[in-house]
Length: 118
Image (tube, rainbow, N blue to C red; front, side):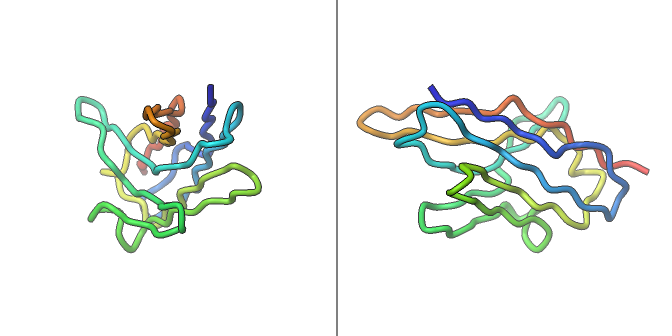
C-alpha cells in the first residue's frame, strides 16, 4: 500500500501563489508519481499536470505558463507551484501516483482545497 498526503492548499487572493506538496510513503519501491488533478464543485475531475519518469512535464492549457510540476525523488515528494492564481482555479487538488508491475494500481491523495478569492 502507498499513502499520499497532500499539503499546501488554502485561501489566496487572485494573483497570488501557492505550492502544493504530495508526499508518498509505504510500499513505494515500484511507485511513481503521475501528476496533479483538480475537481471544482459540481464538475468532473480534470488533469492539471503530469510528470514523466524522466522529468518531462505536461500541462493542461489552463495551467500552462502559470503552474509548474516538479518532483524530489530523494524526498518521495511531488510539488505543484501555482502562480497568478485565478478564481476559476478554486478546486480540490489531488495528487496521483501509480504502481504498474503487471497490474496497474492507482493511488490518490485525500485532496487539498485551494480557494482563490478576494
